[in-house]
Image 1 (cartoon, rainbow over the protein chains, first blue to last red):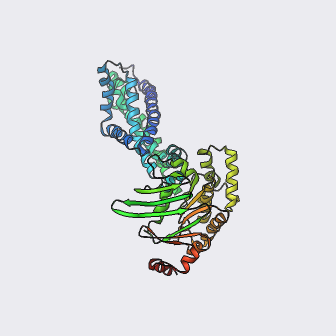
Image 2 (tube, rainbow over the protein chains, first blue to last red; image 1 turned 90 degrees about the vertical axis):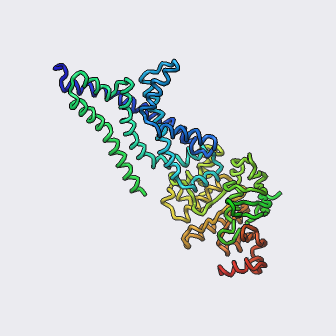
Image 3 (cartoon, chains in turn green, orange; image 1 turned 60 degrees about the horizontal axis):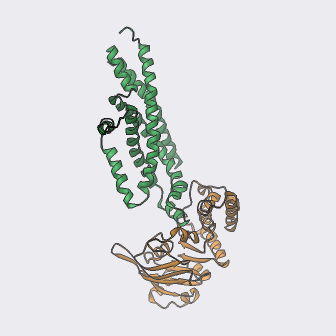
Length: 216
Length: 242
């Protein structure tokens, strides 16, 4: 027990933090790509695409992330497919993130004036061209603040991956606590590290929001 | 064949019929001024011509393309039918030149350099050569509307649809826009305008269409129609605006 000094604990936690950061990045980038595709499907006005995308979003927004992790990790294994904690965590967080980002971005796209769609339609642009050159450049400006704000949720969401054995910050904290029996110190440090990751992002999102309001 | 041919077009929003069998032929070089009270269906009719609105029955042929068909080639149609809106609808994130260049580069695959030359040409035509690199927010309403006209012209349309293009402007800015449209008319551009500018309709228009309750109520040569309106509704409308 005396082997674990404060600094050893902190060093281990910081080492584990890289996996939290890495998993967050995967979820955010993957979720962003899937979310962008879903956004196109969701706003395309093509009726038969609407329902499946809506169901997808409702499923991932309307069920606990933990349950989605279990489904991927344990559920898929029942079909004889080996799923590593890495795969399950990365995939579940990507899908979960994509559902939320799609909804955030859809709101931004829908806030663009109808006249922009009509003007670009009248210029013979296709839906994809309209999105690419007219709508998204404008919607992206509005989307930055809530998107950065949501990234905080993604970082905190990665903590759940500890339950399926993925060693990130929370899991490392649990392991260190089991070895040291100093839960208050260990989890305080874990919380502090999460805070250090999340606070700059929320602060930045707030600032972006303020700047956008001034611009109007 | 007429450049734009509208035959017995009907359109309803729910149970409200806004177009009750409208027919209209527009020949190349015509300047058609559509007037009428708000709610008479004139804007709706205009928006049907380039497929921004759908209609339930009848037919519209623009440059030989059937607009309302199930597999209507709206992209091809809209390459030849330009539209200018009441609210300008410029793309705020692009400069005047970029607004004009967008459709030629994206839709017609015109190289950037050639598109820039087109932009310079059409912006000069509307008197805004010095404003090529200005953003819409830096322009007055009249200037924005002239950029919007230039943006349509860049696609070399065969017909230009103008939907109350001076209605959102301050009175002192109306004339600079009307002068541009008049110039286009003189150069032989086919124009269909929904307008409240009666003097402009009379002086520049070759045809006048008075719409009332979703129908073409009276039509003819503007000077004659204004001098001697046949129907009591048009008499009332004309005297109402004095």
